[in-house]
Length: 638
Image (cartoon, rainbow, N blue to C red; front, side, top):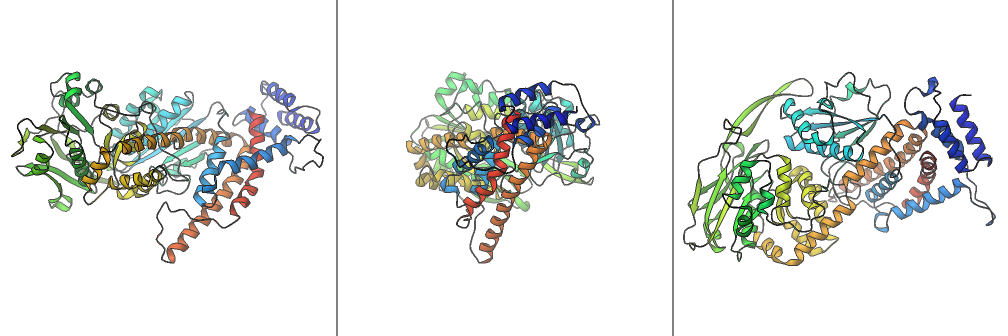
């Protein structure tokens, strides 16, 4: 008797009551030990396919409620009720009238059904990432690989790369270096068109960002079984279930488990002394012992691309520390030269000038005058920065064409350290001789491990940009200023919106701490930062994000869901029914949003679009049947 016939017989016996569910499960376990393999089972997991076949027989197509209260409900009926109650519990009242809220909560609930499931043996996934603006774009893939390898050490992961502004060899080296401790073989990281011929076919592809792989797509068309796909975009601009962020249908933010135990960070010379970059370490400590540095200095870490947020952050910190006698150190950029960002910091006998050089014209966009420094107890300014030069490199585009990209790159000494610019030091006219020293240390780039050291061992206030640095800052519950670039306005809006659920005044403070162009209201910000309630709100904010928006956990569930769907036809069939319903909701939401805009209504990217009355219950009713069958199938399989 074939495996399929055995499976059907077990299913019929369980359905008729000849076998109890427990006995049927035991029979399945015995069946899984058999070495018989027919042609229909050559691909995928035999066990998964057998269990799928049996499960299909164990779930009756029509479930009738018992009219007698004394008659025990069938398993299928219990699962249907469980599906109804689970969906209703998963979607709180606040999300029942909001399309994206409904979509997001339903998808999270379905993901959670796979929490205790196991990935089928022998599976492989591909992480495909496209770099558009430097090495930082690769970190989403790095964190994905590290998180999944930590959870699933035996899962085969292949990394596929597209690059736009850096050399492919440099991108491959970056990924390999940042994932080497996870156990990912170096040979598993390759250009998208150099996939090894002996690589396993992936059961799932994670695509970053969600509009990547336009050139790579045709290379994957020869897979024998089309893989499941999950689109992931770093910011909140993508459609529901495709974007990282804090929206009602966002996938979440990558957190760092090394930092989530921290409620407050502070300057630690000992922590700085542990940095891998000895040059950066020595520039910060400046000849002091770690203990003396901690006692005499405050260290602030900033990572941003543009001049205005950098100036606003510095002025706010200087003002906040007006009564503090400790010296102030900023570890931050003083210049940039990338597409859309060309600026530098100049210092003269009047103060610090943030110059925008876009288009070849130097234009001051903000400044920190010596009068401001004097008023806040600073008597000396020092700038220590790496010497850089403009380098033009030729990169190969995904379509095979080539283009030239210019960037600022550090000039290196023979020993591999960075050359430094000449000493820049100015005394502040009229300031007391015993005043504080303000130092700006620009020693970028540094390894990501050193970025984490600086996040952990600097003051709570920090300046960040983008999704990745936000995840690191919020993991340590930092009080963060945010450089809100044009491509991440939605994420900035989500950040401040979440702050409003803690305290409306806290939302106003966070909005003031976000900047792209223009000048920050640094005096108002400094006043808020001096208020202990602001720091308490940032701690609560960090805890809330850590509890509700853990992207690592979400991707773990997504990978389980995708690979089990890929190997189990019955699971795939029910998931397709669920996804058909949520896709319909998404289309209705987009149509409603477009209609509002066509009528002249201003609709932000994160503006909730209300669902018609009764839509919630109608959606639950349509989802209950496939969800109940999914519950039953997963119960039998695992």
